Image (cartoon, rainbow, N blue to C red):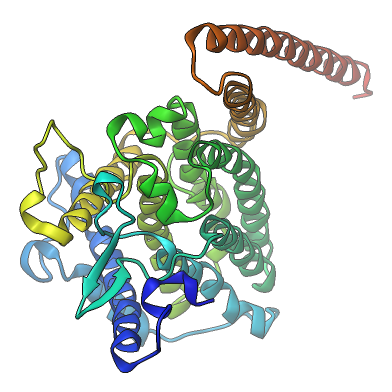
Length: 407
């Protein structure tokens, strides 16, 4: 139990406990402030892309607009539909909001990972990590928290006692479950490359740009992971969970006041959380980008890793906002076809290719690698041909049934 942080391996004194409590407080406060900033950041960036001004009234540059909206939501009158389930109706928003915070407990937010170091730092004479905990199964905690959010969506729709939220919840849960399969397969490629379920070990294995998992796994798992995460977050172009023109407002139609505010905050908090996960898994987390011997944040010492993490995080936050401002919404059949017929087969095939290269070409020799790759490509081509043939036969049978049906 105490191996989750080096500071807890020795005698439990007041100093280690206070450091752990400060970590918890920092994660909670920074998480809330980050969510407020993300709301402002998205509104400001999208308004700039659309030649508008955006928030500019509450505070400097409109930075306090989210705070004003939050205070208003807290003081609005709360209501509950007469046919709703009282307990589950109140529980659903927290099932989406709380897991987004829990993930940050296992993400390395800084530390010294240079030259093969393990990322530990010294604070007041105590050796610790710039993360709340580093359990050996940290990635499983990330997957668990990602899966719990599905229950928040389906319970919100079912417990509201109304048809429109239920339709939105069924659509949303089907979407999230479908893309979680592709997300898990792309994550398996990272685990195969890193050889560990510990987030600190995954970051430690990415010592240089060539060792970053985006390169080591061949980019394809990274692309699939980003697309699957976008669908998991219900972000455009996959925001069919809240397709207002079809479902009023989706699973949260019957929520108002603080309940709706929690759903709203959970959506933006999850964007920051998933961006942190992508940075940790594929871009080395706090690992610096070295240009020869030059480190942009080398002057910052132990804080340099945190600055690199924040910089990489901002790249993905901007990417998600860019998606929202530029990409049109997909139809639901296109969404499901992309998840089941494209992303899952590609991610599974790529994972098998990486596993075959690791097993039959452990030395990394070019001749063995080419031979294994050629065999995998041939097997993949046969599998794709059979898959396309099955789809063609299924489509033909479906059209035949439709033609022969009575009018």
